[in-house]
Every structure is written in C-alpha cells, then in structure tokens.
Amino acid sequence: MDKRDDIVTAAVDVFGRYGFRQTSMELVARAAGVSRPALYQHFTNKQDVFAAVAARVTDLMTDAAHRARDAGGTPADQVHGVLSVKLETAIGVTGAGFRQELVAEAAAMGLTSVEDRLVDALADLLHEAPEPRETAELLLASTVGIGQSEGTPEVLRRRLRRLVDLVMGGLDTAPRQRS
Image (cartoon, rainbow, N blue to C red; front, side, top):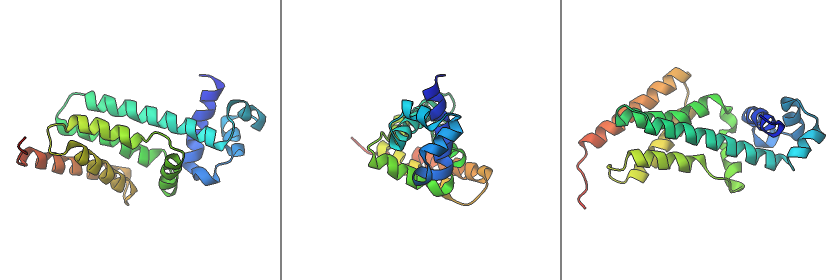
C-alpha cells in the first residue's frame, strides 16, 4: 500500500467519527501519521480527501454486494447478503449522527452513490418480481431505517432478516403481472 492509500484508510475512520464538517486536514494528517504538508502532497483539500474516501467505501461495498449477490443459497439469502452490506456499514463505519451528513455531502459533490450500485445488485436478484427496481429501492430504504433504529447490532441484524423473509415470502405468493 502506498502513502495515499494509507491516508485514505485513516480518513475513512476520521470522517466516520467526526462527520464532514468537523473533520479537518489536521485530524486526517494526525490519524494517518503524516504531517499536514505531506498530506497536501497527496490531496488538494478536504473535499479531495473525502472524494477518495467515498470512492474507496463505494468500491468496497459494491464488491461485497456483488459477492453476496453471486453467492449460493436461496434468493432470500442472496438479497439478505446484499442488504447486510449496507446494514453492517451503517452499524460499524459511521457514527449515527453523521451518516446523513456524509451522504448529503457526497451527493452535493456529485459523487457516485453506493446506493445506486446496491439497488442494481438487488434488482438483478429480483428480476422476476413485479417492479424489481422499485422493490430493490424499498428494501434498501428499509435497511437504512433499520440501521438508524434503536437496538444492538444483533437486534438490527434480526430485524433485517425478518424484513427480507417477509418481503421474499410475499413475492413468492404475489400474483405475477401479465406481460
């Protein structure tokens, strides 16, 4: 790994702990174990660091979602696997108070949304369901809600599994739309 990668790795934690507004180049430099001048050799400003962090997180989550989508098991297991990527990220990477701030900042900067990629992976799995993309968006939004709700990580994981089982069970019994 090169110095730029080390800085991005450290910055993931800093943005997750302090949000966008409270993160400074000084905090990033300190977390990465570099001086501010060394940090500026790799990044122009905080937005530049944040864009690199967003790209890293998006790539990692997309790769994990594709592995879950392509894993064996039932369709419900695969859907649960993709949604778990989102839930585990919400539980582990970002402080609850900063999730919305970071998502809003990424959107304001025009950065590629990981949610769009997760919806694509889910829609692939739900291709036989009525309105697969709408169903995928609904499941992802529900997962975000679960991630923001009260409860231990285990409780949140159980809630996600229950949601997937209910939706997938309902899709198995739903009448199919005629073409």
